Length: 295
Image (cartoon, rainbow, N blue to C red; front, side):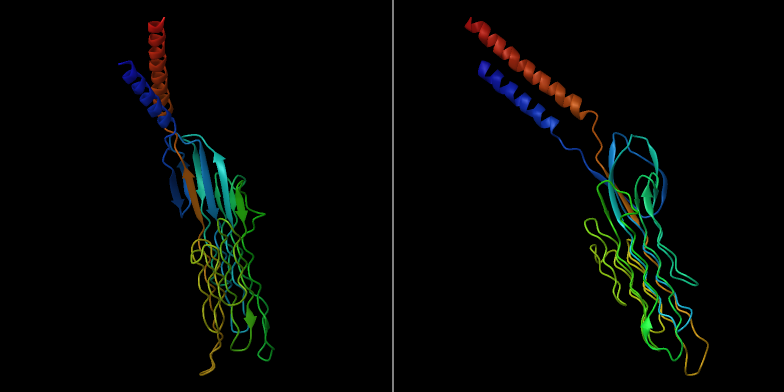
């Protein structure tokens, strides 16, 4: 009888110990658009936040005598942030820069709570560049936009810069608009484009830059999340002759925010603690009875 009681006590103690080591479920929420007033769930006291800035737009062209640059990719940032249950916070997801006329625009920053707390910078737009003449020799076009900067981003775990867009190259009835830079990865910086082709980055095929255009075409948009847009390349109709035609650059891709958290089960510790106390109490009772009978 005493042996069985002892075994039962050990079993209860083991169940109690296992109860104290039960793992709560981890939850991730993905945000692809801006959310105002997201509320921290019950029993959550810290969150991991990851963000990618949006890609910059590839520059458009106002005619055949320019070869613009591609847009830069967005930066990446990650932080661990202390929060309280019920706390309301804003989540800004950067919008991709446009590549339309008359000029391209920068990609938007992605941030949580406030830009001074946590931020991943967006990529910059490509540049229009110089205007060549009919008899000009081939030469460099507009500069590519810089990728979102790690130095301008805020994250207490990791920050990485996005890749730069490529410079365009002009030649009569040839050349190209620059390709877009890739977004940064969660463990590496983005890749810069070096010619017409958009850069393949650390998240490829996600987050790649858009291809720049060949003569007479529009640039391709960047790939979500945060890829920079490719630049356009203008056109001049010759047969029959006609006015110069514009071409658009590709839009940069939107950014992204992911929040991950593990709620604390308020009942887990009290229940396991009571089970442990009961187990210890039964063992103590068993030992007391044993020693009393030995006396």
